[in-house]
Image (cartoon, rainbow, N blue to C red; front, top):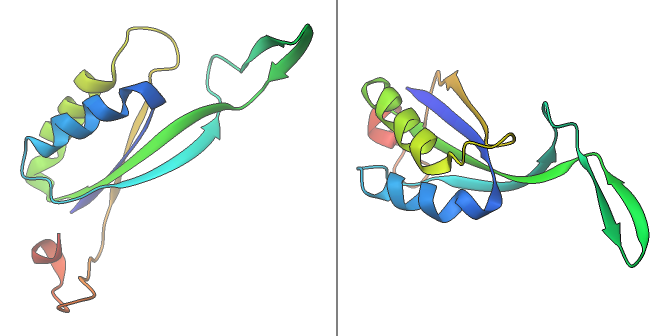
Length: 112
């Protein structure tokens, strides 16, 4: 089992959600986050004053999947979140040693 964590632009969230729901993905977790990568922030002009924005707002989508779904989900997220511009985001894949469904007590892939 794997946890796929994707940090993407806000306006690409609906496209990513739609792409994932067309598969048999049962759920996802969404977190609003801030950070920076190669773009290192930017400068904005607001009411005549210049502000340096060091941490850019992004969305983190997390999906737990079985090992056989990892490449498919990575491909779906990559395609749906891509704009071709700097700051499109990153996808991280983590090993999950255990998953437990609280309501039923199911464990492992059955709990996904």
